Length: 78
Image (cartoon, rainbow, N blue to C red; front, side, top):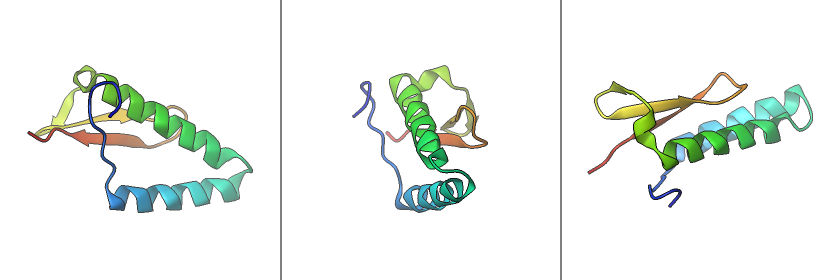
């Protein structure tokens, strides 16, 4: 639990993250670590207050990663 909200990362997301981080590690040494930090920061922002982010489809919200062309999507489950 982060900031009062539970964050669950799907197995599909973990697989995609592994591919992305491998690609960034090939592009430049250490870039995958920078991506990882940016991803973690986005997760933390979304977990702290998901209501800061607009709903874009049904109950899904997203936050852009800083410096990288990706976003983290969250869905509210009741």
